[in-house]
Picture 1: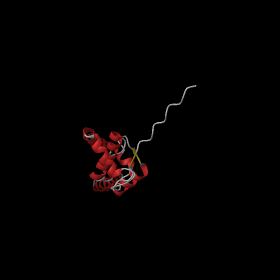
Picture 2: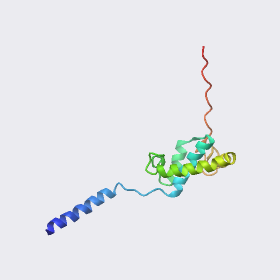
Picture 3: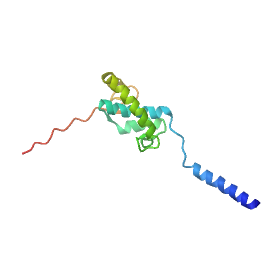
Picture 4: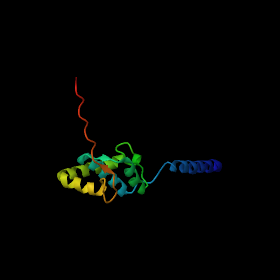
Amino acid sequence: MRPTLLLALTGALVGGAAGAQGIRNAPPPRALETAAYVFAAANVCGYRIGTAPFEALLARYQVSIEDVRPPRGPFGAKVQTIFALMSNQMMQNRDAACRAVAGEYGPEGKIAPGILLPAAPAEPPAKQP
């Protein structure tokens, strides 16, 4: 009976170590809040997100865009919840919120420039002959 118990204990330890390799730490809350803030600003103010600068900002937190992309990323649901709250708050005073976020993350932003870009101009409809 002893060899069976020893074998079972060894199997549990080896299996536990292998399973733990797939687990990773959650991103810092600030990374989730920043991602939600950028997504909310794009939604409320109509900005486009500059992918390369946004990924560089998230990399400072050691987070990838795939981690925080709602709802597919592993932390996307959390970002989506924060996004909804921030969007609702921004909509209450939309003009001031859009000016503030442009000053922080706009093309000449003070925190991280180039993350939020002006919306692409709409193309005029093609003329019918």
